[in-house]
Image (tube, rainbow, N blue to C red; front, side, top):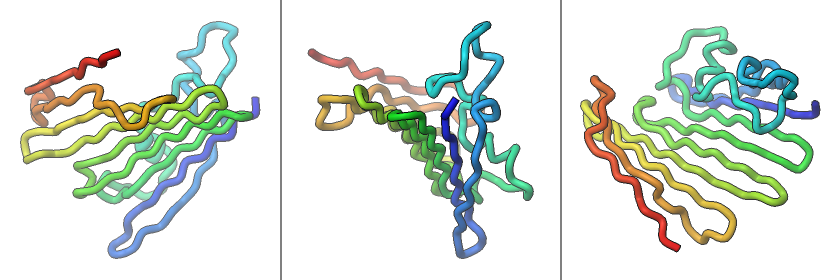
Length: 162
């Protein structure tokens, strides 16, 4: 197989932080039920969890809350391909910056998601993307969601021009 998968987490303990690293086999990291019959696991396979913090619920011995986690980084490596998923939390875990980076010999993509709790009632989400040939990030969309009902209050999808 040859896929190397590691998860690093930076956890907040009172006034200090500590890093801890976990390693996974591809069978532990990817969703095996999502594979077609006869399909082998690949670096592009679907992860078991969509949110990196969900892996910590299976791994951490002690109970924790999102506000205890400062950063999570998952690195997948296979031959010349690298995928990095990173989540940075602030404001006691209510805000986060999610980064998904693909570094391939023939392909580069950097996708950012910024989620910010604007008040006690709304979360604003902005998606940005940068690929080969782009000097800056494009804003793909921006939305505002009601925290209690999870209904969209506002959504704007930016149009891309040639």
